[in-house]
Length: 79
Image (cartoon, rainbow, N blue to C red; front, side, top):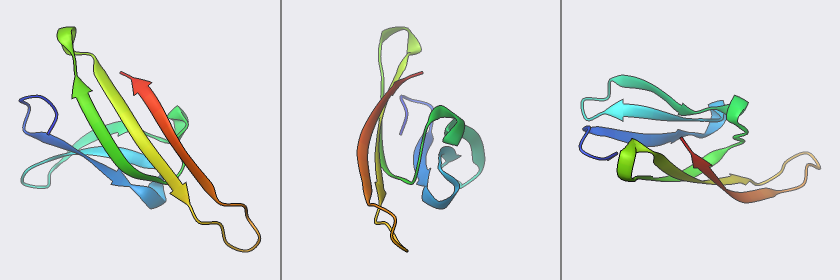
């Protein structure tokens, strides 16, 4: 849950984004997308600090197929 908003952040791995969902599964918008540099996000943590700034840590993982090299990374964002 992000702060007291009743919204959770969920990884949408195949669409290269982190989405916000309400507890009744309604889409509350994108938190981060491929245009922010995401590639296969698989885990996310969000912390809201003083002033409402969101600190977001995203784990990316891609196993590599058809000769592609595996990709594993942790990316940090301030929103």
